[in-house]
Length: 124
Image (cartoon, rainbow, N blue to C red; front, side):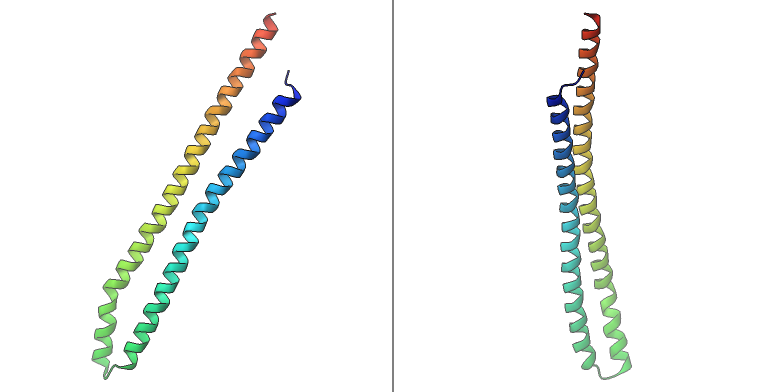
């Protein structure tokens, strides 16, 4: 029913699809890693700045005021990180979903073609 060339072509297509999906997944992971590295660098820089500022504090009230002033910016940074991480995950997921749906449509069309060919051959 199937020729060796058809089976080979189908296997080649499957491997290429898997490689493409893997590349898309790694691209998303790479973006998350880049975000995490940038976030870690910024956090280290902020911590160093805070440590320097803490060394110049004269009393407890000044220290508490300095710490309180950092709450809002920190909350904004955490929120921005979450938004960016979600955006990366959503975009990567959408790209992978689109690719999988496309490949499923191709597979469905190929299966219908095989059934049609088999049905036609059986009638002869």
